[in-house]
Length: 239
Image 1 (cartoon, one colour):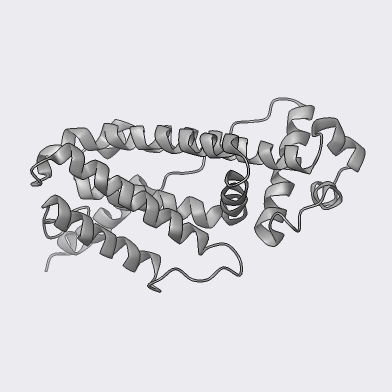
Image 2: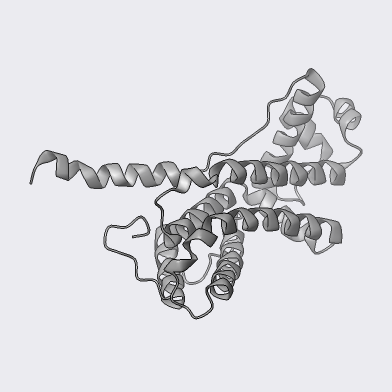
């Protein structure tokens, strides 16, 4: 086989990784006060990842951030305020990341199943990156309707961005009602991804069935494709 042909699969795989690697976007901090606030939020997030909400204290946050407790209280009223600020920042950054990563031109030539694969890879990546935030958000949403409303607003924005990519590809669907079918698939994927995200929290029970992320993605794509009536072509972006 010619050398040029042996390189094509590797090049295709690299192209897929570039599409699916939605890099986390963080806005630059312009002044000293904003930088200090960002350091405190970073410290809070690290402690949430290590110890959860119950292990988070104002003293620990100040120590982790390398500042005084007095400086922390200059920016945040109490423990709850700083946790809520972390959740707000993460929600904002999720939308910024999705807006850039799901920009239409980035996905030219990618099939509908390829878009769904990208959505799953992005979701799993951010869940592994933010296990403490994921858990804090879940716990607080049960206690505060405002947190739940913010979660839904963020999910809705990302869902709408995904639908912008999926609508031009609905012709690939063989289900008698493509619009309903794709909404059902996104709902099922969202619920399953949320369940899997909980398994990334330290000391959490593994998701069932126990499988790698690659196996999970492969099986969810097979289920989605079967329901939608899509048979992925051999060597396609969704293979």
